[in-house]
Image 1: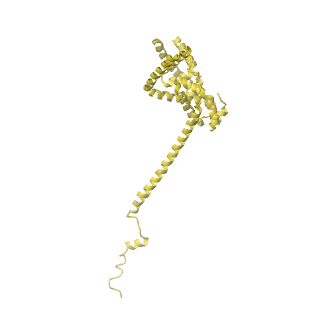
Image 2: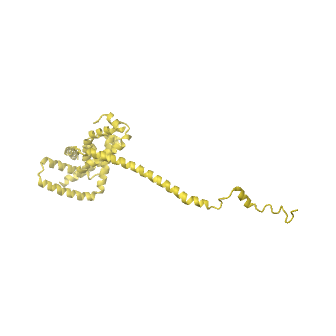
Image 3: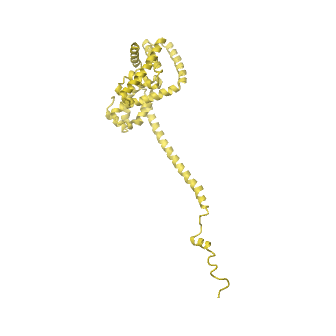
Length: 189
Length: 106
């Protein structure tokens, strides 16, 4: 926990100052998780704000302060899922966005020489985003939380409110799908 | 397969490093509080609008009852305007005619 239970209790009972402190403690971590879940840096803050907005209006439904973090992760997962579904619906316009972005990026790369490290990172981001783009939003979020965010099965159980066995099955299947996409990607190289 | 599994594990770790937690912009908190306030105002105005609609519907119903229903009932034939005695007198005006024989007043 990044904050004391007492602070969450105060925020839950309507203390805006306490809520502000809670957000300041968690915002960087949540924005990081969102960035890795959605893969579009320009939209990270908007999705993050949606998470904290939902948190503000649902905090009174939180049973105890002990379950605050899984609750916050659940809100994050839901907001990211909503965003990804909206994006999928706008896929065609997104494709044209991407081509524009690529042009801008290519121009930028030509204009100012990026260092090798940054290039390698960009390649990794693009590869992972392309792999995650080939599976469902549900699988994408679950895998990112487990493999990238490092949440344990116990933590995921609390976030998803399902049994450990059900999670293991879902994770296994999601991983198999990514692995298949990864192999296809490697064979194309 | 195992080799690919290991490669995929390594890729997740690299991705984690390639995407560090971003620093929130300086206007993150002010914008968030603006949205919270906007949502609060929106919720209040929804209730206010609902209340307005209820009041308007009640007034419209009252007016309709006043203009259409009440005059309609007043025109009904079963509606009496005279007193009870007047109505009795009107309905029984010929009841005593045969008690007094014609022309016998002595």
